[in-house]
Length: 307
Image (cartoon, rainbow, N blue to C red; front, side):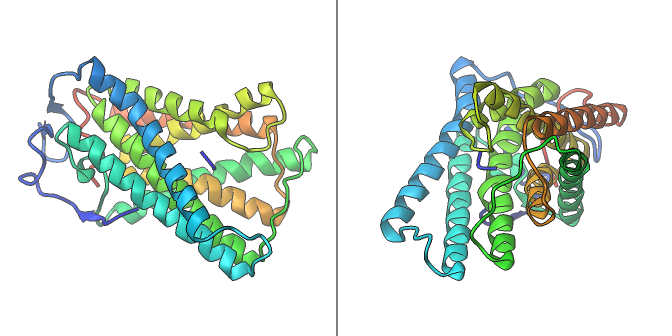
């Protein structure tokens, strides 16, 4: 989309939900799993995240319009506070909706990866690096070669752009969207993790038909989808490899951090950028899946993000 919540501590094995599979080895990812969900539950798993994200954004946008209408002529600090507040509110509401979706299957937020451990920071930073590096590595050469369009400017000072940009990167998009599509959706379909990854990436990609990323016609709207699909594959694969939802949050947030840096260095945008980034992320995701398979993380039932 326009491209948070009490963090529970890591649960012990005795605190896991009764429907959570039990690992067959001390730190492993192989387990005996529950029966596959029925058709109605599959429909909820596929469309629930889309509905939750849409409802949260519409509800908060409507509430903000009533309580605090956006005035583009307002001082920069007020505009920045509005963006941060709206981002945090959307994030909180998405977390609530996700908790309700998980409840249907007897799961909790921690089962979808919303927990914080000693390795979470590392996973988050690795993900940010992956997302940011691809944006800059692909975008800058294309910009210098003249293949991209100039990105529009924004009416905020640099500090406002940084604060608002980071809030949107992680509170509005990174955490809530990854919690729904990689955390909830992939955990709910964890009996077949690779299939779950591609389903979540496909659904996540399709909803970006409604995004406003500089597309100028129908063809460009279709080409734009390659980018969110690609970083969803990379983020989901990194989540499987590191057993951490924060890795996927990092990749998603890193995409926006890279774009934020791009505002200050003249990074352009356009079909070549969207397709180029998407293909690189997809190939990287496939490599990460191969590494995960070699480490035995795809043998049997993946237990979901746990750290």
